[in-house]
Image (cartoon, rainbow, N blue to C red; front, side, top):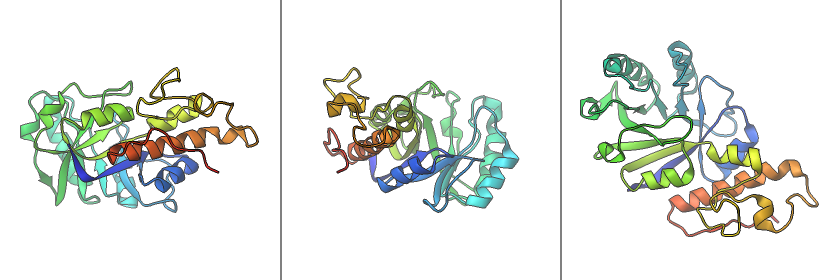
Length: 245
C-alpha cells in the first residue's frame, strides 16, 4: 500500500532537459552523487551513491553541499558490514531528514534502528532489474516505510502492493525514451510490439517529428511517460497522454 502522498523522484545527473520535464510533471529531483545537478531546476530532494564503487568522502561532501531531503547509504550486503553501514548512516544523518538503509542480508531487517542521528530511517528496496535488485521478499519489509530503488514503473507499482511505499526513484523511462523513443503506457498499448513501452510512431500512426525536429522525440516520449507514471501512482486510469498542441 502507498501513503497518500508518495514522493516520485526522477533520479539522474547530467541532463537538464529531462530534469525539467520530470519536475514539470510533478516529480522530485534526485541524482547519483557526486554528479552534475541543476539546482536552478529544482532543489535536490534525493541522493544516491554508486553502490558498486562507493566513495564515502566524496559522497558525504556532496550531501553537505546539496543537503537533499533523503539519501541512501552503503548497501548492507554482508552480515559483518552492519557497523560500517550504520557509520555511513550516522554521518549522512547530519545533512538529511531521511536516511535510506538498503538491507540485503537475510534476517537482518529486525536489527536495524528506526532513527539515527536525528534522521528517520526508511528502508530501500531495490526493485529487481538489470542494475541490481534485492533477493529479500517484499513482505520482509512489512511495518517499515519503504523507498523503491530503480526498476521499471510497472515493477515498482507491483512492489507497492506488498509494502508501505513512501517514495520511489528511477530513470528507466528516460533510458527507454533515449534509446527507442518509447514511453510507458501501463500495458494499454494493444497495437504496439511492447504494450508497456510503445514507440511514438506506433501510437501516433506516423513517424513522430513530421513538421517538428526529430531530435525532440525522446523528450516527447519522456514527457508522456512522466504523465502516465504520475497518473498510475495517483490511481487514475490514464491510458495515454495526447501530444502537445
